[in-house]
Length: 136
Image (cartoon, rainbow, N blue to C red):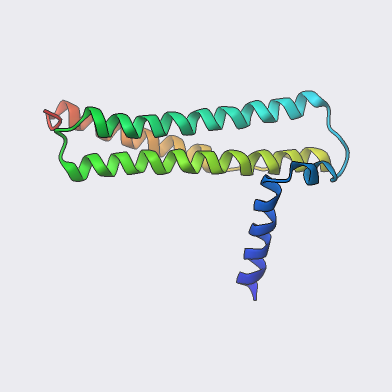
């Protein structure tokens, strides 16, 4: 019962991604500058996702001598990270827009911290691999 309620809630949230007019039906219209700032943040997250996807392709193409398992792992981690950023971007945009319209606090998220740690760890691993000469 709880699982089906949770799935319905997720489904309703995802439907809002594709029907922004329904978001506008809630609450009152915020100052347009806040909505535009929310859209700029959304676009920044999409750029981050695209950069991660590009990094994944770069690892795959420019480190061909890296052990295949390591190369594929780094590539997949970057590609999945890019996909998660894109999904997170639209979800966060809707959540923030709804909160502004309702006069609520903006939603908090751990995603930026998790992403920063993951990218930092992956970058450190790549530095070690390159410094150790495992990419030649």
